[in-house]
Length: 197
Image (tube, rainbow, N blue to C red; front, side, top):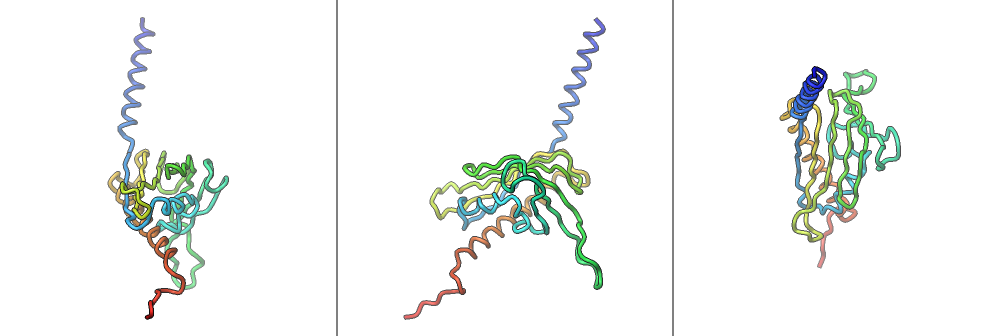
């Protein structure tokens, strides 16, 4: 009889522990509009997994660390560098870094998912996705939205609101840089075209 009671008590403890851990998970999503860029044009920028440094301010390095770029299982190394030292200093040192594994990429759905597999920023378990969502007006000229969603363990040294604020600023900056890149790609070579009569 005692064994059944002990097993039941242990099972109850385990369930309570799992419920507590689930409550401690952080989840959220942020998004930004790209009013001038169709989803089909924005997606290649996001799908370039090892090009994050081109779009996210503060990321100075983004390079392939393992696997084949753009294939699930590949790992990118991202880093932010400390400001340049005073005159005569040696170079910029890494201020923070992360290794991120591409979990899945779906070109049809315009979505990728990745996980932080190591970092200097206090992350434990962190899984996120970035999706390019077409505006409801399905015309070719319609814009799109970037949606950055995540689920993670609480991050040491951060609050959930602080993380959401950081990601919100990041997704807006990524959207702005993609819009700039697309505008530059569509601009005529040599600057403005002047019509003459």
